[in-house]
Amino acid sequence: MSERAFFLDEGIGERRAVVTLRGRPERLLIEREGEAEVQRLGAHLVARVRSVERGAGLAFLDLGEGPDAALNLKPDEGPVREGAWVAVEIRSEARRGKGALARWLGPAEGPGRVIAPGPDLGERLAALAKGAPIRTSETARAMADLAQSEALEIVFPLPGGGTVTVETTRALTAVDVDLGGRGGEGAKRAARAANIAAVGEAARVLRLKGLGGLVVIDLAGRGADGPALTAAARSAFAPDNPGVAIGQVSRFGTLELAIPRRSRPVVEQLWDARGAPEPVAEAMAALRALEREALADPGGRFELSAAPAVEAAARDLLPRLTARFGARLTLVSAADRSGYLVRQV
Image (tube, rainbow, N blue to C red; front, side, top):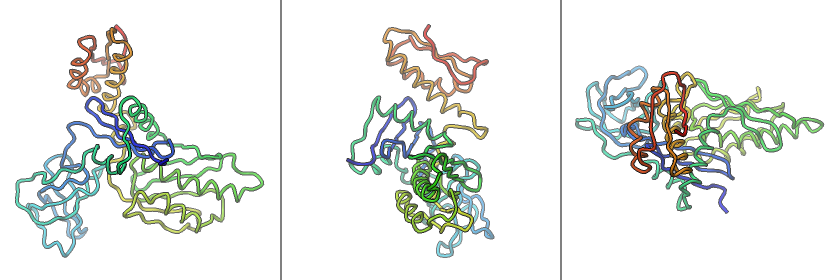
């Protein structure tokens, strides 16, 4: 039996794909209607060079929609000048405060356009599944809700005791390993077991959250078994290849890794910079809640009361639900409300 299972939830205005590893969420992919194709991972497009920073070896590209992308300049790619048109591939999606990263394909002629779209969510999930069955319907929705909730957590338990805490900064992601109740007479052995388990759990959590870049794991105990931990890290982070770089355990008891950044982090799709729910994400959750109530009570009338920003994000999508369930579903804006509430009327 495979260690991994695959799920696809088709929602109103949103699709969510989940990969589980031994029953726990390992990846969460979210795709919403209206997202810019020029910003999608893997898209091939023609963009205009907005500016060139020769000293930094970068060009910044106007993609036509969304933030500019950065292009690393290489001597074999010829001169790149402001205003020129270039063909590029999106290799890393934009994240908060930073634009996408692009790969040079060659010179081009305008106007800006998508040459070939990046794979959509269904195609990305199929590539991960490699022919394995993909579950849908209620099972997929429940798993997507679980994955979404867990992706926003910070502290994760380890089998046998202890925890790993995963927190991000602008510069790096820090992972702290805590022994919890695993100490005692065999403290060194307990620390070794916890550290190896933590490396595997960190790999799962970082994939679930969609995090990349520099990762520093603060290991538990002293005198960590460097070779064993390096081997464990190579195995645990193998699904993130190509491009994973793993350092040696330092004299400070930390293990450093670099993981390629590809997709936009999940937390940025769900929360704003202040740590509050994004109105679009809240609207999708509200519509799922409204749909769930309508299915549970075929004759009931339900009202979705939502904060103005959430109501605005849900307004254009509500007709899809009323087309299925009739006028018994209504949506109102409530200036005094944060989030949303579904109630029977």
